[in-house]
Image (cartoon, rainbow, N blue to C red):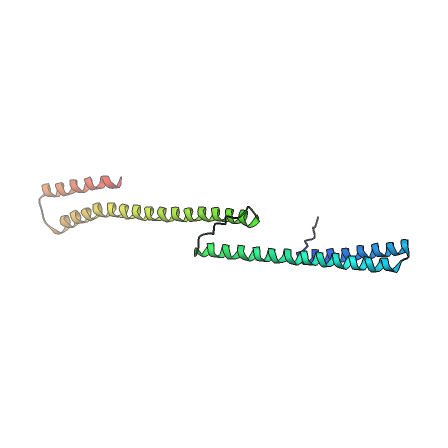
Length: 174
């Protein structure tokens, strides 16, 4: 099942066409019932006034919706760039206030998540640095013992002592 999507402009055009058709039908019916030309003029005047009121209402509504969407877009853009904190509106509870309140809460949650991720990164970097330091010390000691064993001549008892020292460093890796 396919659904037809109407834009605001299409809905206004359909509303205008329906209004004109209904007005013409009503004026024609009144003329057929009364036969009076003045009824047609009154009906046309009434229809024109009603059409003017509807057009004025739609124009005001469109202006308010455009202003609302523009302010919402500016607020979102500023929040995304982090340039400003979301403004706190202390007016009566209207549509903009409701959306702004939820956006402000979302912004706070996102900032908290950002701070949490940054802290976790710092903690992870610190942990990696600590592990690196803890591994480097025994490896450096093993290299020093191996270099001593390879480059210097010594008694078998001293060699045993060095090898025992090497095996004690091996405990760090198991």
